[in-house]
Length: 180
Image (cartoon, rainbow, N blue to C red; front, side):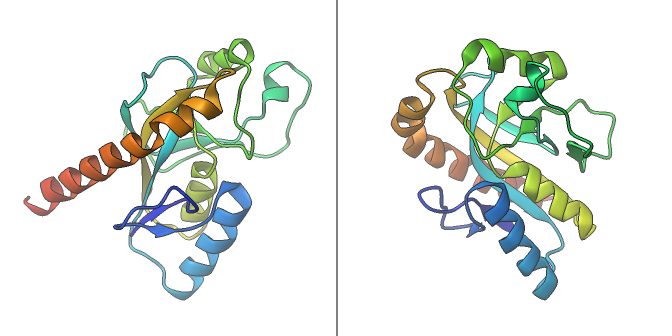
């Protein structure tokens, strides 16, 4: 099953789950309880902490939930804040999720020190629910912006093209997989 966030980030081949961690967790849990999918593929936009360029397509099976306050040593969590469905030794791009978009480029670059390359509001919730229901899962992202003061404006400017690129990429990958 292919899923996406919702609101203005929808695709004709994906089922919307909601925006942010909470909506996604609630709606995906409900879906899994009543009609458990065999596989979950999340498709969405992402912000780059600096290693990925605008319109890069990135696939991942690893997500984190690290808040900016953690990076400045102003917070801690007793919770496991990294989840992966990656069962290989292949290094994965870690996608960080928060209900907030990072706009402090200097602070956000610190994510790279922890091996975190992108941010997307929903992906951590998707992988946590997939883990709970023992469902293989992954994500495909298109970079729309850098995590800086222009994050929102760049997201708005690049969002439609990113959705087109994601749609094309996902359809090509499905074609590749079904032809095997």
